[in-house]
Length: 95
Length: 416
Image 1 (cartoon, rainbow over the protein chains, first blue to last red):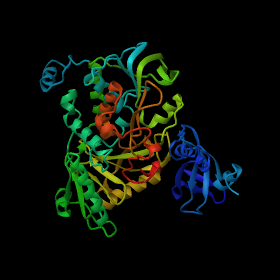
Image 2: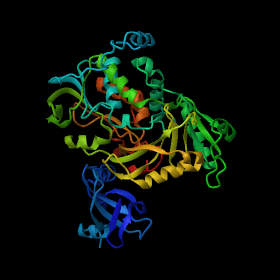
Image 3: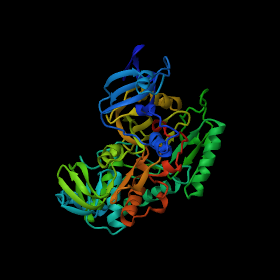
Image 4: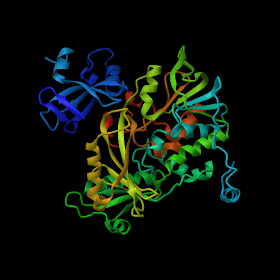
């Protein structure tokens, strides 16, 4: 697979390591009353869809940036690549 | 019809006119006591043991495509029980014992060959870890033996033991491990279940569950609604997809695992060997092909095919210990979808929905587990209580902190 890095252009996916569902950006509030249940679901449960999937890739053998890659798990087609930083900011997770 | 050597001779002399289909092709009935979703090894084994060992009647196996067309037809056929943890080892040893009597039990030639499995050791720390593992195996009634390099060389003289980076220092052997004709496992269980009245319904895709007031009443299928007292799901890589129809999120990701077969060679590999410094394992099929595999590709996939970097990685592992195999050409390769759980261990449990039961999360180790998985799932379905060897395979172990993490990798499925 080729991942079209927003800063570096097309890169071989072998340069990256895979983390999983991009929902991992949305870390629960540790002070919430439901924190124990929230963290269990956050850490262990996954949608695991067959089809489009937003996922976290780390450019370990490159510029060490985290990316959010929108990829189809049925075809391996990649439709969108963003810096995870930008996605996190949009979701209010980062400054 | 009972298969035997005498029957083969009789049919050979009378023009092979007496063979009949190994299982029926029945129309689905409107209601069954127990419906198993998934006509793979685990689903068919479950139906077989339900009928044979637990006296259940009116059972159906629903299969979207043809039986045995998923991971039981696409694996590297290894059986073993060389696990470390208490939650796993009794279960896998139970499975290996079932393998040992399986062909007589279901009257089918599954070509079970206990040719032994050897895990190579490359460092002092690994020797300590494997010694501990071997002791855990022996404590649970399995066999294990630590071998010296000289003993290993007697069996595998062409093994590269003096590599500068990963020298081979010994190995942990399980002599009762081995290989099986994988398709015959599905067919043997199917035939055994069918002959005991189980309806095996192929080309029947489950499209939804009918759930009312927290009870599952049956399944919607491409061939109409089928009611059931109890429903067992055993669909491996499609687990998340199926259970999402019951609004469940599972502690697993589906990943692609590739495996490979070389062209046919004369007998060269007497058993199964695993590389201890990378992920590579190899055996030789009875047709002569070297059957080998390694790591997952590492990303979520339902595509049933992988990518080339993993092929390179696996072949590098092979070349590190078996340089001679570099001359063999690759005949075929394939990718299967693995239901990788969050701790690398499976789930055989009830769900929170009455009447709905789940068997999955087998990661890339489901084949060796087939007999015990079927037996334990049948036990759960028939008695509403887990089999003694499968009590740890609960849904709530992640929530409660009772993970069964053989590799100690944490909740990162692509690392198990």
